[in-house]
Length: 182
Length: 128
Image (cartoon, rainbow over all chains, first blue to last red; front, top):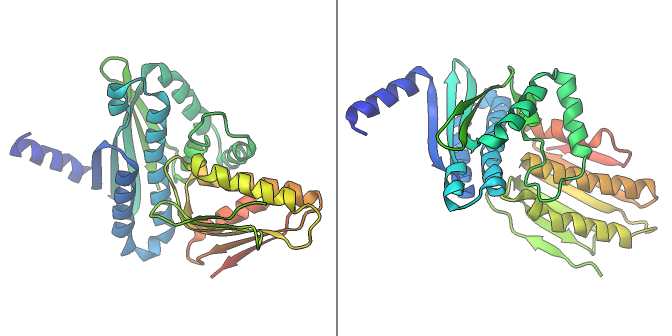
């Protein structure tokens, strides 16, 4: 990357109102550090306290989702490296926040993920609450690392329908991206 | 005899005190540890053991929660604890739930209400 590329990247970040961006391997300590940065950034913004809690919550669900997926699905060290790497972008548009995330998933998992998100998108607010409560009552599946509640929680927190995209990546991977408006 | 479990809090995991003498499980701080279920599994087991031992006793088995933030894995683990306590309550065991929230932390107050509203056990949500 040269100076010109840096400017081009900055222009994209500015145009998209990105106030925080991260791209790279996600470890628990990176998640904590970045989470602290998000909370600190928001501290001055006291009348937005509800939004702040929501932004932090969506951020944690998205990043821990990526790590849990990598831990469960990775086949070998190289696969772990690819699956455990994430992109996190926080945008401030006017007075509301949006968070974008992106990560690679196995091509074989794309259809199931897409079906799961479409099911969630088909639910209205009471439907989301009912689905959330049902999941809460279900036993945790053997070996599961998450409660299966993350996307439901994110959808309930989002002020607009969540937006997702699955686009071709090299080899056996698909790039999954998600946008959540708070 | 059930043993005491004490765990120091970190930036992402709560301070834990499971005290068999007071039959109280206390959680305080943040809760989004890595491998959340592994973190909570021994605590749920501790609670089950204390509930089993306490059958018929008059001092309540108490869950004392003061968590500022919970990821969904923690929420699920807490719901499992509350379900166990609710079953014990319906079977005649004395139980109590105290959930302490910062009054400004609206989301935690809402969460506490949502988790507790369908249960029959006695609870108190204290906003401080």
